[in-house]
Length: 168
Image: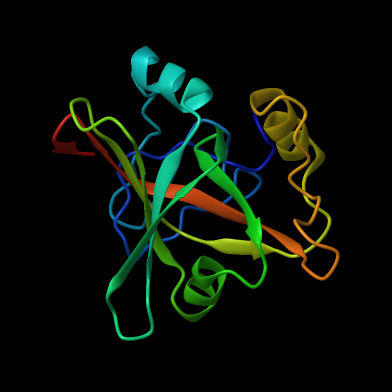
């Protein structure tokens, strides 16, 4: 599944944001460092991203220490999506500093991604909502845990991958 306007980038400097597909041709990325073409992920990594039920999300606390928590996620078009409660520590952290890392649970064949979060408070993309429902047996990522809470969606376009011990 692909969401329009997203790119799969595996080699982008941390200070640069990749342009949206609408800003460039669908087949190229200019990262302001000489141009990097999107590289496909190995099929085994794509399969894990599609089927692994949990990832670990690392955010930064206000004092700079890491906050690591397991999350449900979907990955599509080079972007990780995480649903969570608006009042959670992870949301407070990303609102203060949007830099994050995500990692799948297997330490033998690491899959780690770095990116910068965009927080969606409403109008969640329908393809992402459907992807969560497919992956998690009908679960609605929009449904609050309690009547007093609200849900948000974290969008994390990948800026850098660490796969099997190699930064890309």
